[in-house]
Each structure stands twice: as structure tokens, then as C-alpha cells.
Image 1 (cartoon, rainbow, N blue to C red):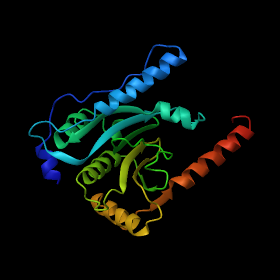
Image 2 (cartoon, rainbow, N blue to C red; image 1 turned 45 degrees about the vertical axis):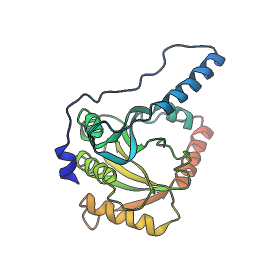
Image 3 (cartoon, rainbow, N blue to C red; image 1 turned 90 degrees about the vertical axis):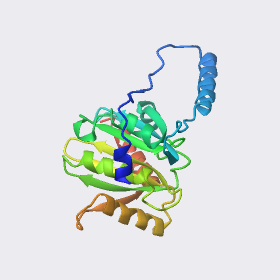
Image 4 (cartoon, helix red, strand yellow; image 1 turned 90 degrees about the horizontal axis):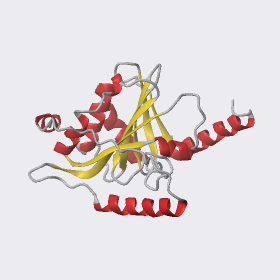
Length: 236
């Protein structure tokens, strides 16, 4: 699979960052614009180009960055996630990926997300809310290689769990980096075990590597508990 991807790298520009709206229309006009934008997005579903190698699913790259220590709400988190772009073929993937900064070169509190088209990288998304994620904490210097191996395995359908995979995230932090892969059904232990074993293999992890599975329900509860404490202490 890696040879297939490597052989099809494309140097076309992949810088398709989505810009924020700069205007301030009235509420009714804003709602109308949002509906029109949704309709346009539906019509703009990406398709493989002529002669390209289609992937089994379409995917979207996202990027987020925030200031550490600043309390975040679910709404502000969603507003902070920016779409980089969507792709439907191996060639389209390389057009984006070959121009993206590698995780190891990111600074601050940054994340790359790669999710199936139509799934937002949020716990509350319908496709994610009953699921969870495998989490691996990495020492600095390993994120770029592990991220590339993970997403190539995901795009190449190496996990062999049907439609269970939702997406993957790499989180760059100051003292460590974290990668995770999200799936739809946290209660399906056979599936989560297969994802774990495949993850260990494709990342060539040492046997003693600690891997944690966390349901999104637990993540939401921990987030709410933490922010409840923050609010109770006057936001500090």
C-alpha cells in the first residue's frame, strides 16, 4: 500500500485553506447565507479525477490551534477548527499532504484531524457520539512518522473493521505529542481490539507501549467536570 501511495505523489498545490467570513450581515441574512453555504457544500462533494485512483471513502483534513490555559467551550472549539480541504482519490490526498506542515514542525498547541467527509472531529458528532478513540502518547520527534503511517493505513483500509473508523488526530503539545484513531462503536470490544492490534502493527510500536482507549462519553464528562471546577473557582 505504501508503494502505491508513494508512486502517486503529486506536486500540485494543496493549499486550500477555508477563510473565515469577514462581514457582519443581519441575523436573517446570516442564516440565509449559512443555508446557501450548506447547499453549496452538498453540491461540491469531491470526486476522483479522470484516471485517478479512488479511495473507498472521501476524507477531509482539518486544522485547529488554541492558546493553552484558556477555557474553551464546545462552541468556541467548533469555531476554531478550520477545514483544509477534502479529497476522494490517492492523487488528491498527495496534493494536500505534500504541501502540509509535518506535525513535528508545528508549534504551540496544534492539531491535525483527518476524518471521513461529513464527520466533524468532535465528540458530539452523530457518527462519533457512541464511539471512542485509541490514544498513544509519543515522545517528541516521533509524531511526523507515526502520523504518516497512521493515515496511510487508514486510507488504505488496513484496519479491516468495515465502516467503524471515523478519523484520526495528531495533537502537538509542548512536552509530548499524541495520536489517536476514532471509531463509531465503543461497546464493540472485538472491533476496538482489532483496531488496537492493527495500530500497534502499522506504527511498529514496542510491546511495552501504553495504549489507552477512551469513550467519547467519558471525554465529554471529564471536560464538563473540569470546566465546572473552572467556573466554580471564578475561571481560574
